[in-house]
Image (cartoon, rainbow, N blue to C red):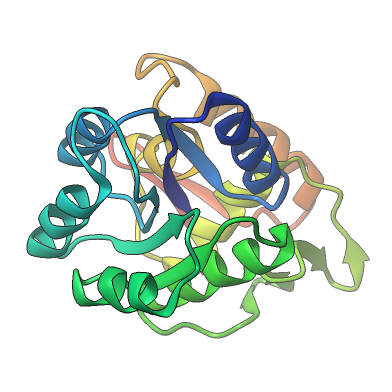
Length: 218
């Protein structure tokens, strides 16, 4: 779940980024509106958490451009919780609106809701080969055995199960599970798939398709 956080107050940005990462999101950060638009040109984000009062390019203009592109859900943040501001944000095309200060649990719940709206419908619990994975509870097991997975292992397994047997390239896994700072030439995906295979145990579940990527086997 790839999220872009756009917030010019750096301490608050670091706090929100750390909290979202703890809840399993892959987070990139932009500190102004121009950087946000540049990042969105390069990366398809499921959700953009967008502060309204931004330098360089105002959050209202960023929102308009993102809505025109139609590739991300927008959760707008603002220091004002007045009704007219909420209406104004929604009229710009934002999918949701949250006033500061906010309870972090509410922010997480709203981002999860927007992720569900941005993605094709899928079962709340993903299953294959004796494995069941619950994205909401961040839990996974195989044949009743709890799998103790790192966030990256969990993310890779979630993406493979959600693909329903289709092949996913290493590049796509890197984009979906890691963040913008990941080296495109890194072996991180291969290493993570290797440790995930060992934790899943036998019979083997993840198949390597040479030259193409990985998939959940039959």
